Image 1: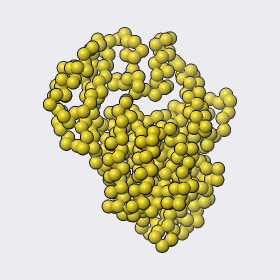
Image 2: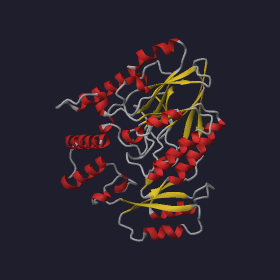
Image 3: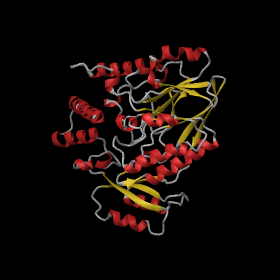
Image 4: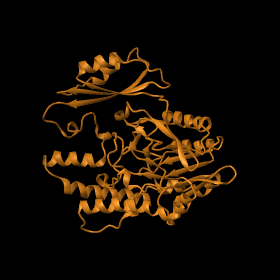
Length: 408
């Protein structure tokens, strides 16, 4: 039996105001071809199918068309879990219909714990694999809120709650393990030591709830993770992996190789684990330096001969605002049809800057998470100080708003 692990599609994602629909469709078409070429039996999508809880009609159409096209391949089972970007209700809405097509959706933690356990049979109905489909575990899923608890107490309770959730599977999978049936788990979380990019949203306040690889039960033969956009092995434990996002979601991922993970099971064990690189269809380029250095680097750009022309983020270090920067950059694009768009950033080097000039290098207000904007506003109004308690209160209010919105 062969399984393919992917995650963090973020359908509907924009880079500033630029649609990524073409790139996502290129990946989905490639994935359909790969399912057939590799004779994949089971497809696992480890969360963040959509970029927001209220995806556009275009994103929904891509998703449903893909699921329809899967049925034209040899892939018999599709298992989808919800991520922190996904709305539980949006993912779960068609689950009763889709299960008749062997598409299993676990948008959030179900009321019946064992609904997360999905047995997978071969063509003749013989059990071959068991998947413990754990979605993103929200705060309310893993702990009871206690008024007045400290940050350290809250962190400890979140971590313990996540560990307890995975450990509950032990009693339910013991029989399968005794009979030599491989068991894998999914997760959408932040593993300690993971290498992040600029595009991941904090999964719990302050990224609490970070687990080390050895905190997962040893009974799992493989753990398919989502949330981190760079593909990687967790704590040097080869069977615990992030597949990463299939397309670069920010310029910080411009040099990342995008991939899916393919597993093959024989005699109850993993006999093959391979990374399959996803072909790039649009190059994201990041260029830094003063104006002269940036111009020199732009002149040296080469045609990557990809399906879609490249986008380039240009970070210009300057002591004063360059009013005609866009016009100067556009002139450099003449005769370079393989560069479609520049994303200019003016990075102020002066010591005295306004609020929008205090952003981290290469960032604009639109790029920042709400917490970063809040902190910059505090610094602009009250000067540099320790706002730890105020920021924690803001984060808790923000998290509660998001969870309330998802519940509605």
